[in-house]
Image (tube, rainbow, N blue to C red; front, side, top):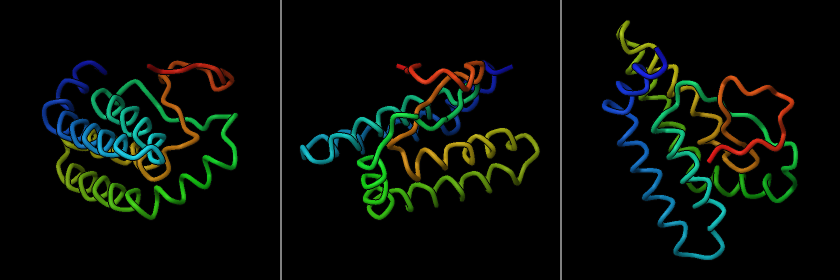
Length: 135
């Protein structure tokens, strides 16, 4: 079922979102200071391609720099991306068939709002698995 949902998601929303995040990542790589944001954009782009079967967790080793970076990200891009996910999620939830895709948009809000200090892991990975890296 996850595979079917991911394929439908890829066609209707995932490909376009992933391309948008990848473009934002490339723009972030232009300036040296924004490279961490670029890395986060590519991580989110991969998640946007295939979200079903994965989840976002907090990294235990995230520190003050991640918090400061998230504040900057929130002001510059995070709020606008989050508004887009909320609007898309509500639009998908207007139909019964679109509800799982609306939920997927809502599931992406935490990582798009504050991406630093987060990681994307398979849904089957236990919570006490701090060194697991996806990708």
